[in-house]
Image (cartoon, rainbow, N blue to C red; front, side):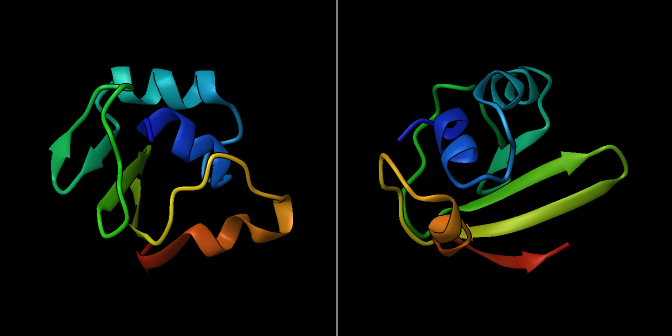
Length: 81
């Protein structure tokens, strides 16, 4: 699954266009590498999101195409905030 879509489906970022822009501005990293919006993410990958001066690091648990809002938090586990 594309990283911009995963961020939207998992509700880590509200909109796919915002996730796309964050990737373009090198604020999204997969396994410590800056990625483009089309980068593929798979279970086991470490995703780091830079929000201003704070960082959120999560481990991808699953990558389904569609998830209910209540189940979105189960797609990842937080490593550190």
